[in-house]
Image (tube, rainbow, N blue to C red; front, side, top):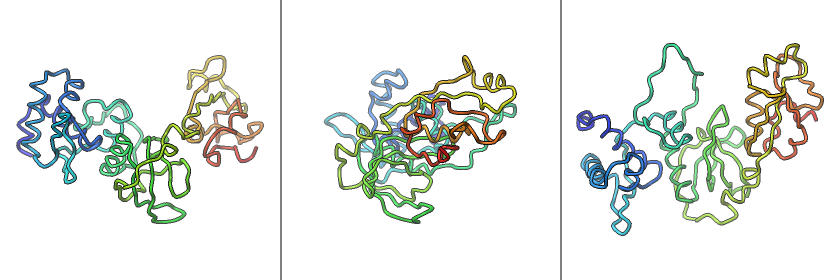
Length: 291
């Protein structure tokens, strides 16, 4: 868009923040811009005027609280990169969301095979921010395509892919849904009940210690101690019970009785095996089923 090309970098950043806030939070105000960019009230109001000049149909002013709300026909001005969006959401909604960092030729990150749809992320985030239930079209490997009513409370990267943690009204439980398997998101007409909110998610609210040690089969455990900056031969992590299974799987931590997984498969082991009784998703934990 030619009008965007004529803006300074600072102006683009502020307009991108307005665009991002409308898409992912459903609202924006001058005070939000002041808090984010330390600009004055007049300058922030001018940014909102400039944004409306570029996308008049994207937002409407609520005069009673001087906030702009996202219109149903919203069309983003900026092409926000999915990985940058999720990184920004996970790290305090940082700058640069509309300007993906160029890859370095001398520092290569792992290849990201899975990229969630930005519109799906946005729909989920707005529901989380506004404490709304959603109706989704979901495709699972076991049941195929189904319609689900969910009450989401958190987006989570399990180290391999993004999940949304939510209350599933079909099965009346808190569980995880893979974001890339959600084909559509719409706000549900049924408001959340208290028992469907994050405060009632037992496995989410429970934080457990995981005492990680080098696998007993290793000939030179000091190498692993250095890898993970262990102290006295161990590393103690604290994880939500809902996420601990993912962590143990991601790092191939042997959780079998007597740490019996063959050498080479696991370089780490869980010392406090008694904690497994509190972990959700135990079936994905290495060796846990052999206990």
